[in-house]
Image 1 (cartoon, helix red, strand yellow):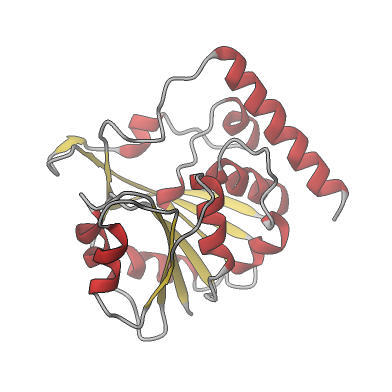
Image 2 (cartoon, rainbow, N blue to C red):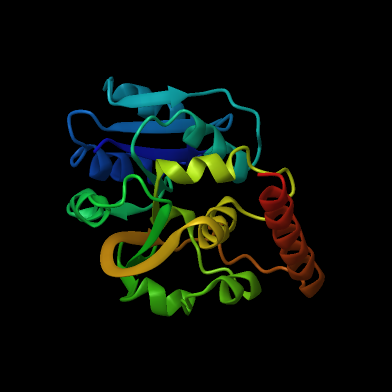
Length: 235
């Protein structure tokens, strides 16, 4: 089983090294860390290059200016049987990839996505919430996650089989994690795994949890449902 960890970066110098260190420590001989950088203007790219590690594949100078399509770019370059998404500012537990290998060992030929639990930490690395699933008020089921998305890209892993249904990403989806999770409900199996395998960092620049208007929320739900229907019809 080959694992591809896919990370999207943008001006992430503050926490990036701690996250990369936590990932590299558990990559197997054939695994890879794919990083797509969306035109960072800080030291992000320099930090990545300083590792000089052949397991890291960096795609720099991207101009998406969007975490959605920055992640899509990383995923497009992944060659693993299992794809694991990573944010630039979290910290993985030392057992995360071992747990994923065990959970996916009989699912490589299936369309499967798993979302893992974790703890929430602050900007200093102190635990502020012992259970990420409780923080997100996680609910299973497709309609529950259309009404309120609980998928967070930084703690999902999925089989390569899913890519045939989700790539390319539609231009108008509200977020990549929502697209991946809901598409899997249609074509395969989704599991919320209550194993705390990483620390999710909460800070002022988090994309997840930003306030949005009711109109924007309704628009996003129309867009995601419409794109799911269009993709399903044209398969």
